Image (cartoon, rainbow, N blue to C red; front, side):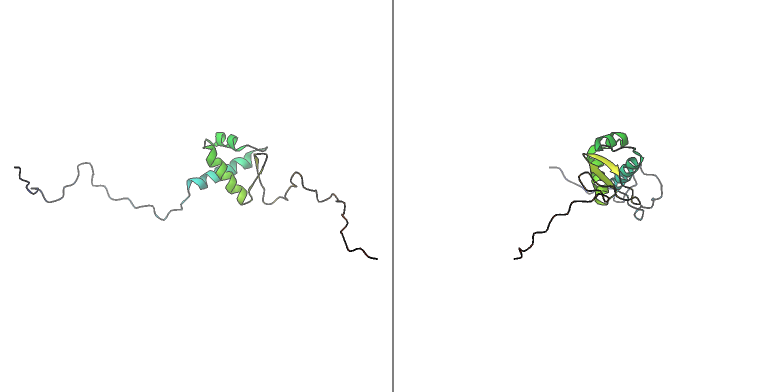
Length: 123
């Protein structure tokens, strides 16, 4: 039978791989900008630079990002009103400009024919 003895060296030893380097402070209090936030910023800047409506996949190729991330960023911009999409082509929205009429909507200067309201028949 084999007998098991206790270790002879009880004191903890320093690893030879670690030097006498002071610990670096952890970065807990810095601003946390996520990858999604950086994607939204890059997409917004690319849309602002574009001189014509751009598809999401073209933005993805230009920015070197996955198309799914660019699409998610465009949807976030659309939710806050910073981007518009028509026929899968995206444009940046200028918050200071007057909104342009959407296709299929009436222009403010055009008069629409008034419909007669159905009312009670009077004798």
